[in-house]
Image (cartoon, rainbow, N blue to C red; front, side, top):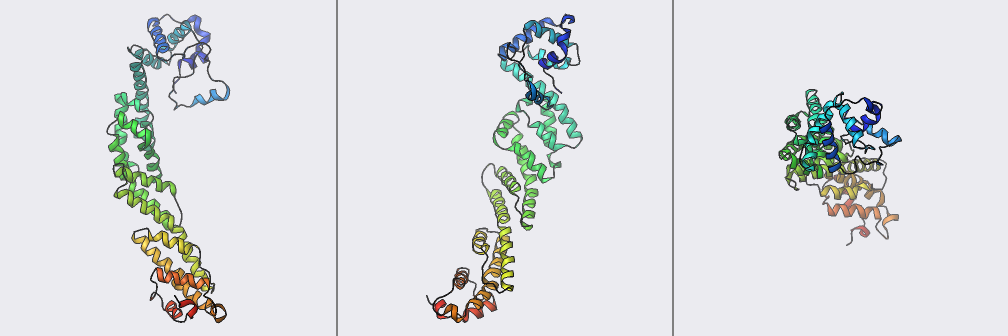
Length: 369
């Protein structure tokens, strides 16, 4: 866990100030001056640390910050710095002291980021050794400025080379978030080959995410998150544009969105036909129109199945049930009109013997123009 000078000062070293060894004074003074120059207010009196519940939040091991603002003067700071230089925190202080020798604040900040990158590189390497590629990938997206350290860059390069080992669709979807938006832009700037990494990741994930979307379609469910990730992967494969892969992803998602209502329409139409019930399920008209826009083999097949259940099989029952003299003597019933409208629009004549037979029996009130 990274501990700031302020935390060590407040928790451990205040009681020891009187016995601090006299070593490294000039370097610690230089660090104090660099911090006051580059981070105004950081050591200004009156800017105390967090208290209560907010203070507890700082216990997160993964949080790379500079600690709390400190209430201490130069002499106190230098004393704490000397104590830490001879404690288990000496590596932490060594990094700070080395960075303080940089001429400009920009160089100082870059030096600090590189030092943190070096520490995180060790964690990344361990994750790769344990096969935790998803976790390692996330660590490589933590802060683009860490790429200033060669060891961090090398560790992340090994992660990117192992991205093929990530096979779980949910894991692929998780790490793909680093391939979009502001994070992506910053990472490409820090590591130019990151664009290729995301392209490879998109290619690897496309088939798996497409299979997940298709499975959701076949089960009559909707997985909007998988669809969104599939479309993002497709757009990456198309060079950031909505090309052929994006069109394929959109079609897969459109199938998934239509599948549930199509299945309900078929089921309810068959049930109504069996019960001689003259009612066309609401899914019939709207979902048929939706399926007509899906130019895929599944879309065409499903549309034909829905038309058959709704208007050929149930349609024949409706025509027979409603075509009685008391219903058709003066006007054509609404249910019959709906069936005839679909028969004409989708050219359903000749699609079913029972339907064709009932069409021949229609009265003049239903056949006149």
